[in-house]
Amino acid sequence: METFAPPRRFVDHPHYEADRKRALKTLVIDDIDAPIRDIVAGFSRLPYCFTLQSCFGHFVHSEAAAPGNLEPLPPRDVGVVTYRIAYVALCLQNSTSGNRLFSALAEVSSIAPAFVQFGSPAWFWERQVNAFALQVEPKRFKDQDQATIDYAEALQVQKVRDQFFTRLDDLVNALQYKRFGFGPR
Image 1 (cartoon, rainbow, N blue to C red):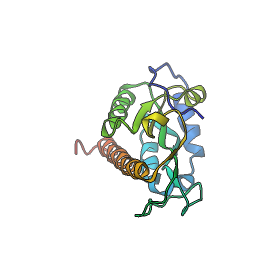
Image 2: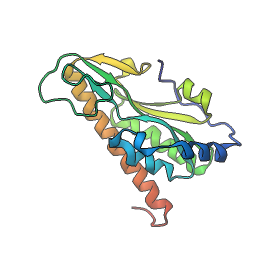
Image 3: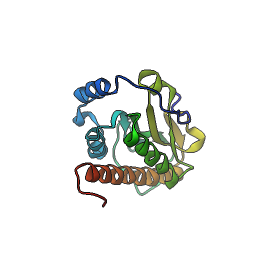
């Protein structure tokens, strides 16, 4: 499945509120990968966005064959690793706050440009206008939802993935902090 496309320009979205309400009604936090539940829940509290899909990213290898494995890589070389992409896809409101969030999300890729991409995957946009996604995937595999990599590269991806979600957690917390009237952190 192709996962990446450059970010598109915002378009008019007259049904944003109804689409957001419907998405939040069907959101089941317990169905989200445990390590990112707070991030997804945090985005859901911001009135100018809603989550479309997310994944913590999974490392499947000889010692962890389950596709939804959430365990970190072991400290010893396990050979070939199938990495299943980490990402967060959001619909942003075409508003001042939505545009600010767009800019903040685009900046997240600066933590590791060789591994983090920000864009508008076509298959999300076809289901929901103003859909944007951040993903962690080695750049040469940016168009795929999984990659087969060696253990050393998998360790790099894991480090970037963890930094990526820490950055998103910090961003969500800062935005919620501001939203509830406490001013800048």
